[in-house]
Image (tube, rainbow, N blue to C red):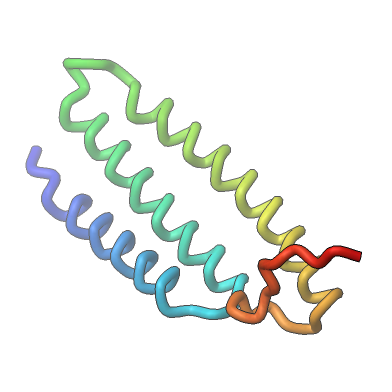
Length: 104
């Protein structure tokens, strides 16, 4: 089996995700870009598992499940942060988030 097409698609997905992380200001779009990158990693893991199965059986699928769990946790925590940011600032632009600590 020649797994060129899945690797190319994974590279394109990862590239689009990196572009989204670097160029977008909206926090929701940043989360979506990170999801694209994680899905690209999953595609590579599953393709590698299908092509080199004899060396370590089912390890790519296990890692893909682990990445899916990490992605679900990331979305849950990220959306909670975005919702709280929207409640405080009425905006989800990441470059307007104050990072300094304010002493009260």
